[in-house]
Every structure is written in structure tokens, then in C-alpha cells.
View (spheres, helix red, strand yellow):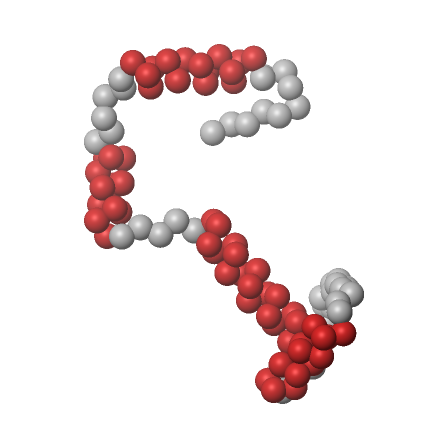
Length: 103
């Protein structure tokens, strides 16, 4: 049984000398190499951005309100009925295009 080698990609960046010196100093203070420091810092920030943009956080009150709406949705008003009709028509008009989204 062979060992699997993880694929690694390379990232390079050109920075002003002052930025490089700051990064070197910070890496040294944490006991990491500059590359380790850059990857750890960039990954931490990337994960924070992804969570901020993709995760919806609700208070317990808002969660209860949302669940209540899903369990007992309000009756369709005139504007919603028009929007549903327009959506269904747009789906039919786009059926022959390369973009076929199915909810």
C-alpha cells in the first residue's frame, strides 16, 4: 500500500520591502517561517471571510420567527402571485439556454 502525496500549489507575491520586513518580524515572533506565517494568516482570514459571507446567524427570537413562517406560511397576496407567474414564465423562456437552474 503506497502513501498518498497531497497536491500542493504555489502562491507568490511581490511586496514592498517594508511589508516584507514586517512579515518577517511577525513570523519570527510566532516562531514560524515567513511562508508558514503567510499561509496561516491568509487561511485564517479566508475562513473568516467565507463564514461571514456564507453563514447566516439568527438570534433565538429570529430563528423562532423563521421556523414559524416555514411551518405556517402566509397566504399568497397579489404581488406574490404575479412574481410566481413571472418566475415560472422566465423558467420556461430559459429552458433552451445552457443555464438551466432547478430549485
